[in-house]
Image (cartoon, rainbow over all chains, first blue to last red; front, side):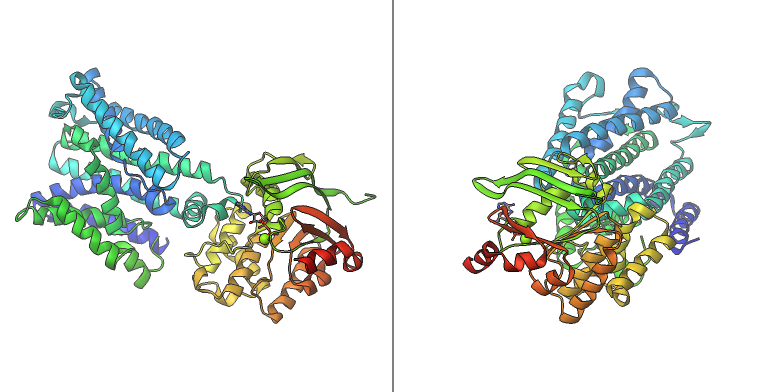
Length: 311
Length: 240
Ligand SMILES: Nc1ncnc2c1ncn2[C@@H]1O[C@H](COP(=O)(O)OP(=O)(O)O)[C@@H](O)[C@H]1O
Ligand SMILES: [Mg+2]
């Protein structure tokens, strides 16, 4: 087994053990962090590995979340098939977004993703009778059951989050060392060169958008099912900026970085909220410090200094 | 024509940038197995011409045939997959990646992502261009001449049928140029080479035939001796 694989499996084992050690408050946080980290890992596929900067990732999270949530609310579906609907909706939606948005590049791409995301947010508000708009809705505990497991139980929830996280993490380890993953990096570094080496850059970018959007959607669907609430705030602009912050802080283009970034930001916010409620100010300060002192993020620096083998 | 087959030909190929006719109505034939030099003053349209061949920029007019197929509207990556490799005049490498990773990306399309095989093939290529001892270095940290050699290695890594080299010896030392000439002779045993080159010694050492461009058009074509004696060529160079 390679060092990279050992390291990431080790991280998963540590997280599993932590559930038994940590106080309930923190293991609850960690469950949330793992789901959000999947969202951030999805963001990293596009931003960190392929060099595509999206400002509208909340739309993917929301499509997964509402895909699952509305299946339950409107069609009385069970949790597992509702999760499946969330994933399918995310795949189709990100495919559509990719086909349209990838006609643009650079700043135009950022703006197009922002606009699409805004459209999703407004649609959620517009269809208030179905979605309950801003208020959102609760997924009742009775529905949050999968194969006899109660997803609202803190321990079960923790391990469900860990399962999703582990699949995403190991999937990323595999992806970044695969042929496709290396081509994504090539596109990030020099798209024209990649094309002139015979790689279909457009198809690879579309793949990155679909994978990224689907991971974000899976995180959204899981979030709704595990924590029971579905709301329009998950489709708002600030929620699109969060994964960018997580990834920048944790290390763009590193597999574990998005998790590390999510963990730090989550607790930074948690701690700072005890003496200020200006979360965005704190986030802004972190961002400024990052761009000044650690452009590669935490794990980027770790890789550069100590662990060149880190994927 | 005789026994040799034509690998590449263009018919009426043109490219305009606004009002500027960078390449105008070029008919060109390249037989399989030849080393052809493409020369001409700066701004003659050489880079534009070969960029249309490899699909980096679209043609305004005309037709390109490669290996018997009309490739005029074919996307660049498909032409590359058919066997056209282009090394850029303005060095275009993966600057932040290591030298070995750069070369691996050029061979992995053929060999898949098996680490061992990729590494071995890449190291063999780096050995050939004399960069093996720099394999771990970040590409951007190398001297310009070494980046040019890396660019050549990435061209070779694709194992192309047609290798287009756009001013490859720019920035190389005399010793490196001698190595380059040896390398291209070796490569040319099973690859057709189209070489844009300003260094006339390199042209004379390698080219079987020379095509001369000026103001977007071909003004002469022939053996090195014929070109040497050609008055239009002399005028183009002396006149500016
Ligand atoms: N992308 C472009 N846009 C506008 N003009 C261009 C472009 N590329 C090349 N040209 C112009 O086309 C002419 C031919 O350029 P080029 O093909 O680079 O010549 P060469 O390689 O022979 O030096 C020049 O006048 C150049 O300025
Ligand atoms: Mg040129």
